[in-house]
Length: 587
Ligand SMILES: *[C@@H]1O[C@H](CO)[C@@H](O)[C@H](O)[C@H]1NC(C)=O
Ligand SMILES: *[C@@H]1O[C@H](CO)[C@@H](O)[C@H](O)[C@H]1NC(C)=O
Ligand SMILES: *[C@@H]1O[C@H](CO)[C@@H](O)[C@H](O)[C@H]1NC(C)=O
Ligand SMILES: *[C@@H]1O[C@H](CO)[C@@H](O)[C@H](O)[C@H]1NC(C)=O
Image (cartoon, rainbow, N blue to C red; front, side, top):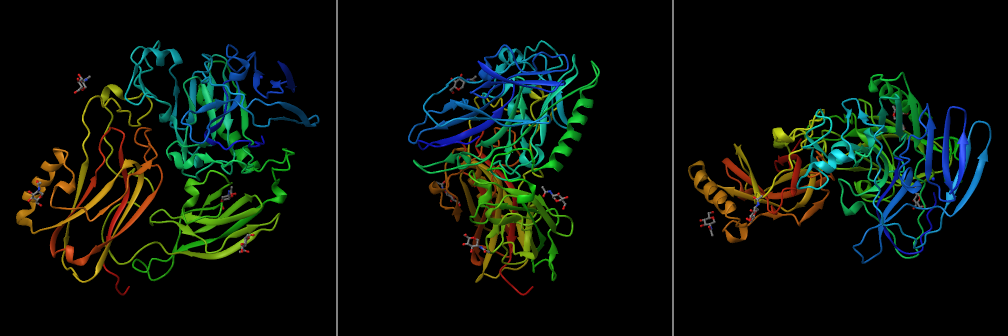
């Protein structure tokens, strides 16, 4: 679809929503019949394997299979929900194997404010990965449940099927872009599967570890293209008045499969996975005839080998194993995680650091990367200009991660996830069956106070005249303000100060009220909301602080890390990794 912008606007969410088109076009091949409304371009009917309509026929035609955009005008808070009704319909190509139809519209003010509700009892088994699939509650089960603090989360207290219990929350079914290739539903009575296969992430925003929704109660299956989930407003697309913007979303692949009645739904899942593998291999598709979608022979492969130079660890270059390497619009190192406008092309290196990124569209990019086990973001020194069909071999490229000295101590694994840190179990009554994600949101009326973490460590020697470096990588932040306080003392007075400190804290005092001012504080950072959305990471933040050597003592030292903004259950940070580095020295 092509959008022509008349007014400036922002997209919060742009997604293709299946679930389910007064003129119509019918595409039929003896196996499958797909009906679309013209010129609006809604999918109104998918007839397959004895099912008259796999989509929810009780919904309005515009609420079965559709695109939607949630957008707002500058200066207005109100979000407008628009199902992108086409105004012109054309058949682009038609032969015995395929038909390509086009629905276009020029942006205007026709609005549709209704929230989509998609219900279909026939599909009730949902699958999005090998270990996340189950019989799902119905919209009625949700309606009968108890809404928890975060309103998307409902404690199912009165489900028709007693096996369906715990908490239902669409965020439990979120997935990193890189892992989100197929999700969908099975009707076990008819043994029919309905799957959305997303063979490439090139048109999605935020890079490979951006998380988004997949399928959820409805039954609803989504193909989100732009969204702020797990990232916040920095992933809202903002366009100025008159600013041209064009982007191809998709194609995505809708796959229907069938088996013997009352088969195990997993057999349809396994088949959908195989199909996903085939679709991923077939990318970029050669069938779309739009000028805006380059075919494989117009695209480019870029390859090379990424190495890491960490002289404080190794005298030789280290292979960047399982590193993420990608092309994204030009910007600063790491800017890809907030990019909403362009295309991104990513792949992972092998154990030797070799990478190969196929199917890159012509354009100007920067090559970015990050390496599990090392902090920070890599950016290749010069921009990469891809012209039609000319492959690029970059050879060996070297990442110098931020580092000033030997490691004195480290906590965690630098991999942009807080998975290795302590995550409390959900309350028993809120455990969700077949899902072990953290569902404990019934935090009720508890008061929330800033929290303080203490890192106690010994230093056999200190050079008071030199700077040490504290690296602090965050896997996620939501309205957090982090303060670092270093208090130096000998063991004897440890308890005294600590007690005072905690006491102050409990009273809700902040450091200004106390003699100890923080040596560093961040501004209020983060709106990724990953805590409320059961995420183990959101956007990546890396801070590096100088710690003047005179603040440290030989013997025991303590660093207090205080999340100073503690006013609600869903505010906080998730740590990825912390490290204290000695002053620079010979390797
Ligand atoms: C990713 O890399 C692997 C291994 O080099 C390669 O087989 C695969 O085709 C690449 N995928 C893409 C989309 O570039
Ligand atoms: C790529 O193109 C940009 C803009 O056209 C130009 O500024 C840049 O120098 C080019 N980079 C290389 C490596 O040729
Ligand atoms: C929540 O706190 C308010 C004010 O302290 C109190 O009046 C109310 O009863 C509390 N609600 C619950 C459910 O505890
Ligand atoms: C702040 O902490 C210091 C110890 O570091 C203590 O002496 C002082 O009384 C505290 N200030 C307040 C206002 O409690």
